[in-house]
View 1 (cartoon, rainbow, N blue to C red):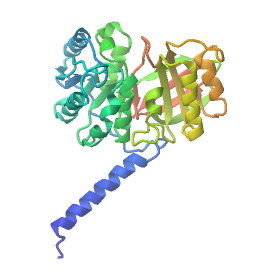
View 2: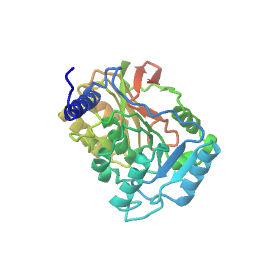
View 3: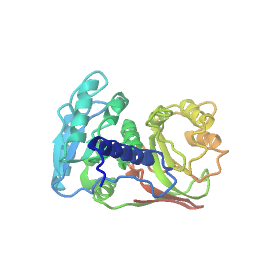
View 4: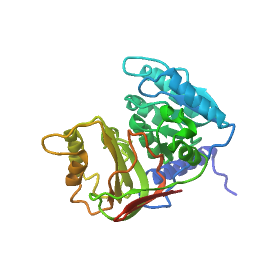
Length: 333
């Protein structure tokens, strides 16, 4: 029997791994049987790492969130630079990267809770992309600037959770979204309903749910972390951006063709802005910008920089039903 040299076996194994990764990265999010990895459901005794990969955070907020998580039965590890301060950031690029790398490579850590957003995650995306994230997948939890981390996880075919962070978790079960978040982390997939809007485009769509903060994900277009993919159901939200800036981003998406092949669109909350001379509201501007698209579009989703910010799973399979009276979003694996 002919023996295959070890070097040849190693080459064949590397080729097989490369093909597998390419299949995961480039299969259409509109196909249900994509190779998405879902981190293991959390169980009592699992460790959750808390860190601040962008802006600084008050110690009391994090300590309160850690107490809530410990009372639920989890171990909590607050990373060394969580309470740092370096200009507008919680630490230097290197300090924030060190916390992220330590959390991602610690075999005991099963989830990474980002304490807050702000700005700065993008500084370390390329370094984090070099980590073997699929070998030991962990839940990434957060929103706002953390949308960049969700884009990283999506680029590696790993599900993550877009949700509120330490400030809300610190409220425990007194906040209605916290039990839903905990249930999702522990293996339950939710179905959400909210009132229809006259601006909606009715219809039904299926696809991988992807998205986040509009300004963040728009800046990742044409990078390895571009999260706006053909066949997906895209969700977007934003805060403190004037109407004309959001309009400019929407036309960027339109002119680039980014929206031409998505299956559906969910518009979350756009907050902390003022009407301008051209538009009475953000929603009316968005309605005008989206008029040419004949896909289901749902306005007014409770996603964004608001008290009621429902947790949703990035890369999960989603069914969006936009009806005359109600919108339904169902998530499944």
